[in-house]
Length: 252
Image 1 (cartoon, rainbow, N blue to C red):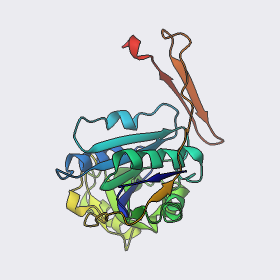
Image 2 (cartoon, rainbow, N blue to C red):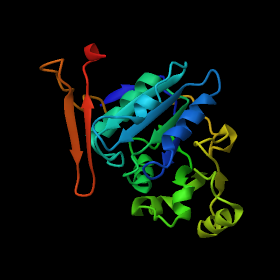
Image 3 (cartoon, rainbow, N blue to C red):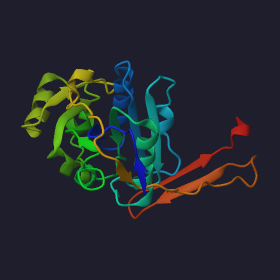
Image 4 (cartoon, rainbow, N blue to C red):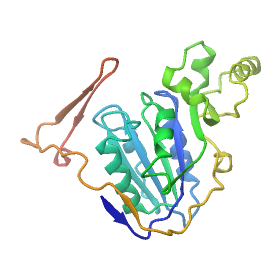
């Protein structure tokens, strides 16, 4: 454990949930483009596969944005060492004014929210209402949401109805009736005005105490025995499977 000094408290934290392919990364990219000058933002990304793609799509040279990735599993395993250390390291290095978290589409946003409100995070983070990114066209075709995303609907502060450009008004009305009592925002390409982000008015506070968070090495990096050959990494569970390849920088 390590004590963090000069890091803000009650950092506004926005969970960007939704199933695979709904447009979570597109939304985050659009939000980053609207970051106010002078603010520091941090983004924590989880992907099911061992080789991350979302983080590569979010690479930016913009000032005040820090990215971190936890590949190879479910971000909602908050008690796991990779998450604990990865989040603590990101907060320690970035000292952000605002934090965005994108869990894997295979994760469980409701459980992640619950655990982020518990020690050691409850005084460090101020969790805002979730934005759930949904594929409106897929829902209109009758494709069901995964159970984990159904559970996240209860706590969602905004349903971003992405990929809605092909839906006529009757189709939108029908979907709105199915998702009653939840604010909807119809969009394409994950576009959302920053002022519509739930909790955008929340601000971090100056630290009143030193905060102790986990430290250490979450994972050991693989070493290339032959830089001419890529490293193949496989992730598998009972329901899902992924494969990816990592090339040595000298092969670019």
